[in-house]
Length: 412
Image (cartoon, rainbow, N blue to C red; front, side):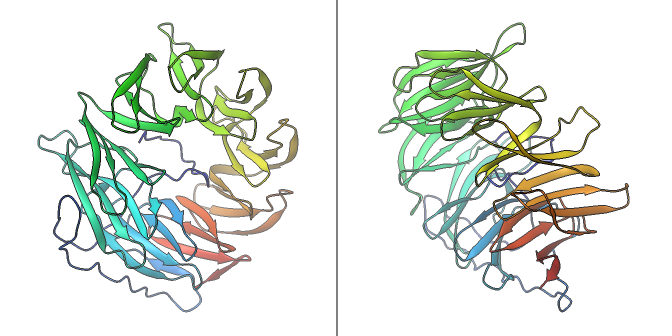
């Protein structure tokens, strides 16, 4: 998974993460002979909504949820489950490594990719770990050679995994290998569609037959592709960098790799709307017709994110402006704008737009804005390194604790 120094986490893309906790033994190729995870027993002050972490200084990131539980990971390799009906931590489980991917939810399971050992040291390995969603107990674990591993992709009942020396397809229920293809370099699965698995390898994309892993075609892109710059729909949309440093967005036929259209543009933070492809390029948000590559609209901004019926973005980082904006995904027409003190990150959700910033270096604050109008719902003098909305509540994590806010009040 591509790491980014920008402190933005949107509802549709949760990045990977953080923690500390229980030590258990590993079992390769499925199964579990480990001890059960430690149950997380919170000790909050009554009504405070604050939960201390297992170790101070952890920075939270990455959120996933199902109907009953919100899952998050921390930078010490621990995954946490938080109940939604009553917002309380219910379990925590140590993956025994450094988490390198967002949490992937399969039926009854929480799956993530971790690296074991120290970066750059010989003999490193990586693992895909599946935890039981209700208890955090290890359901299965698969270890691979090589320290690096990318985000698993779950599609059509198969889990596509990739890393330093492999492209492997697993049964998500058991961890059993369906097929595996050795690789000579770092590999990342960037999409699945049209009977193909698309893997980024050494500045090119290779299309593997989803049935057996056989390579069907490759295309050179001029830079290391990443899932951040690649989407699969009717076509494979991928960014290409030329020798002169210019960027081109390509639409490639899924079956053959043939170029269907090309547009001169960068490809940061690719998003799909109903008919358009939306992305960021050098301080502007662009929208192109997904079938033809024709320009539909563009506006000044950065970090686009879809939530409900609107597209949200903030002012470009290079400018000394701190606005949050909502616009129509179809036309780019502005629906509302809000100017706020210095913005650190924001998270757009249908229920609310959460914005973390500060009125001064020592005065952090989180604002919740009405997603349809931009009007204030509430604000609190708290810091945040990651935020999300679930079950009508805001879950806000900073370096030392998690906080739950409902209708402007701390709950817990």
